[in-house]
Length: 121
Image 1 (cartoon, rainbow, N blue to C red):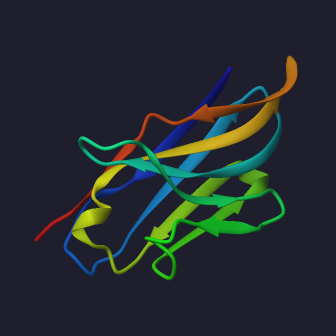
Image 2 (image 1 turned 90 degrees about the vertical axis):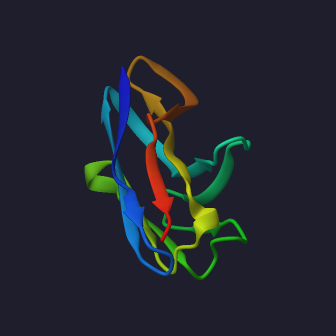
């Protein structure tokens, strides 16, 4: 069984910074891409940033230049540093990982439970 647990998040004023982290654990065999999605109230979940096992990154246009994704392969963790936050960044942020487990070599996506980020004055 695989678990992804997010930490961080919270409330910050516009223009401020916040970081979120996600740790994957369980019977993991290999992790490929990891990343973050977000879902604002009343809206569909949307991709925010992705990072491959080799460190290549991809960002949504709305966060380019403000957010930075990174990962620690040894610890099975992914991070999202968010700067110059705007009210429209308010959402529940979900981490995910594409991975294989020891009992099944099919590549599947696993998700965290989400963490709230609120940008408000």
